[in-house]
Length: 257
Ligand SMILES: Nc1ncnc2c1ncn2[C@@H]1O[C@H](COP(=O)(O)O)[C@@H](OP(=O)(O)O)[C@H]1O
Ligand SMILES: [Mg+2]
Image 1 (cartoon, protein in one colour):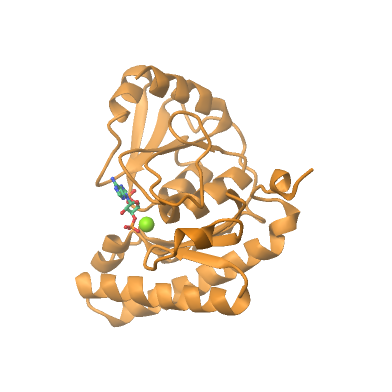
Image 2: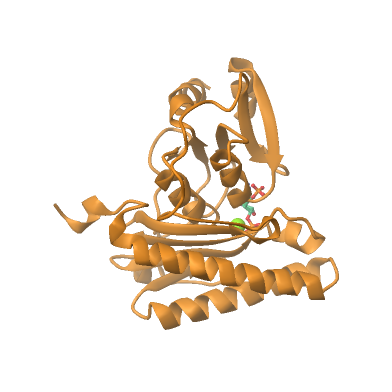
């Protein structure tokens, strides 16, 4: 068996990396909470959050994992440096506009990709005191949340496929900002499904996907294919994270759409 066969979120082989992802997501979250407490609401706070969180995370990863490559929303990485290496994919501040406005719907994402596969990840939602990682996240019970299908979508950019899903199911909408916040809504039993389309980048979904997969959720693109990571172009337009019992039924609706 090649090393690539064993790369999967929650694998004991990546437990130390998951612990580092958790530690760094937590520390970055604390830094952002301090910044939020010491600055007025507005775009300047948002930009300072992006910049300071990026600086902290990339400096710490360079120090703690000097042989690994790092792709950050706020940085740049030559595509040649993404291939054949351990690659950390980080979103230092996901949901940055909410952070600027003073909401709690923002998070910190730290993920590790090995040979194009998610190996570990952690998501912090500091304003809510939430912190999960792929090694210690609890396995979710595979039972629907309720009689309706609870679907969490972007507050500002809901997916156009939602209409088809609403025609096929009795849907209860859970509108949230930030990819990690929506993923935690599924993990916490507030939603059955997180559906997104229309655009995202690898940093927006790598860590949420890693945690979701480790918890036993099914996490794919909206055509059912795996979400690729470490691509030359980090554009990653859509995803479907769902409880195992409903993933196939939602996928069938999306495919027929
Ligand atoms: N259509 C789109 N195109 C590009 N990025 C998108 C997008 N829809 C959502 N995103 C990004 O995905 C993250 C979560 O979005 P949302 O809150 O709408 O679910 C945000 O990241 P950032 O806050 O890091 O920019 C947002 O910019
Ligand atoms: Mg983001």
